[in-house]
Image (cartoon, rainbow, N blue to C red; front, side, top):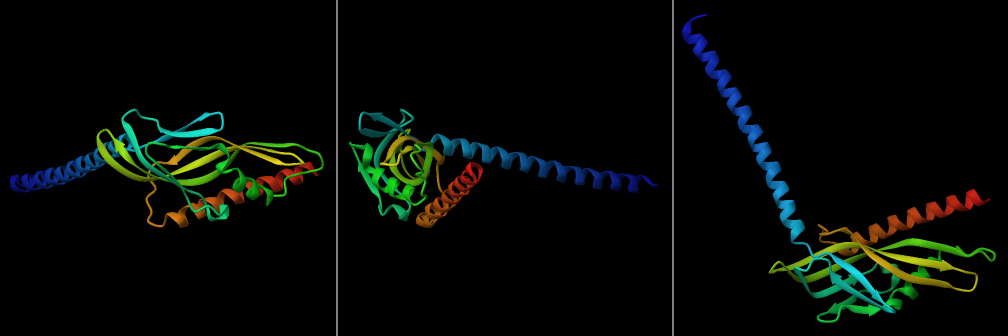
Length: 205
């Protein structure tokens, strides 16, 4: 092989290697960018927790760097409650605000049995939280998906419902049709519960 051919082969090989290195570097750069963006976004999401004192429930930010301006809670249409609006400075609501709607929903499952007391410790209802406020000095608006976790005690005489916690499931819901989103989640949750309940009845029998 002549010297010129050797040089040409080496040049081509180096060019291919350079392209490979460039693509690899771009891939690393893209991953680093995504990680940085995710970290940036996670630090700028307002996450709420629930504090309960007697019959009052307060919604407060987890981070001390967050301030709330308003919170709108949207439940599935089955609860006949379009939304619950909370504004500054009072982000407190009565414990029983959800009870009637959740009790009516649970009654559709026909869970009461002859004299048997049933306890559901982690009965979840999906909710969308439209949150407006500030985090680390920046204004923020987000729509987050939470689960409302209830403790339910069913007796032949009545059904007692108590909100135990709110649990964040998706910090920022990326959709424009929020009503459709929460309905889809609710339908899926209900189906899972019905399937589990039917299985328990088959096991009992």
